[in-house]
Image 1 (tube, rainbow, N blue to C red):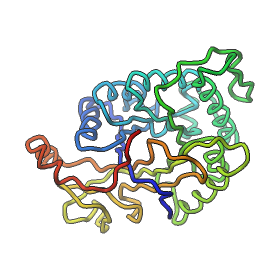
Image 2: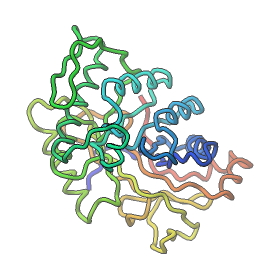
Image 3: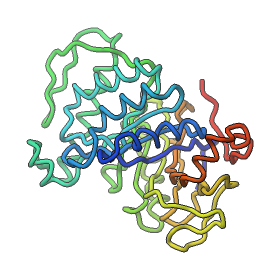
Amino acid sequence: MSDYGHDLVFGSFVTPSGGDPGRTVGVAVLAEQVGLDLVTFQDHPYQPAFLDTWTLLSFVAARTSRVHVAANVTNLPLRPPAVLARSVASLDLLSGGRVSLGLGAGAFWEAIEAMGGRRLTPGQGVRALEEAIEVIRQLWDAEARGGVRVDGEFYRVRGAKRGPAPAHAVPIWLGAYKPRMLQLTGRRADGWLPSLSYLQPGDLAKGNAIIDDAAQQPGRPRRTCVGSSTSPARSRRAGGASSTGRPSSGCRSWPNWRWARASAPSSSPVTTPTTCAGSPARWPLRCASWSRPSATAARSLRRHPRRSRRSRPRCGRAARP
């Protein structure tokens, strides 16, 4: 699989557990301390055991200074796009341009309905997502004249004032698996954010081909379309075996954990980059899931920060603008 000329950017996929909020935030802060580039949280507003993702993202952004933050992915059926657009732009301004927007068409429809959302068919979900992207991009385009107008099947915005504009060009990444969603990713989004547990062998290559084809269609704005994948974080031993007993494939390891290459098994944290053809490069380029370090590794990092930094794996870092 081509890397389209971009370096890898590594990040974490953290469960927004409400049972121990301090530990949840601590993992995100540790991600920045060890040099990762991105912290993401799943978004399930109907899950009472989880912290609210956007509240958590705001708190983490305030507790960090460099790492980028994103929902992985935002539950669109329970977060109206016009309000979401302003939430994202506001946090991007407050954080100094460190926010990315992951979006999904929705799942777990019974739970969504229980929270007051509307149940959609798969086809309706794709159309609603495309309308939402249009609403969000129009609201962010604060320099355009006139109000925002989207007269869609699912979202109607009639003359809303534009703005605020985010601090940087916030990328929109889609959690996509089926052809219609993959085509939408290529046409309208900036990135692909699937979970490996939902993919079959060969799906990554097929998905990249569909996205690249859609990205070259006439009328496509010239944006970067990157791809990254997440998988459940599982502990790794220094010997190179995952908790499932499978051999790992990764960069140089440092205390008690490692990152994995795209060739690793689905139980490993993996990055699977793709960039839409003909699009200019732009940060952020790419991310991967991360296995949380053991308590021993965390203590070692705190006691010997300089030695830990020297032993970091050099897996390729993207230069920020």
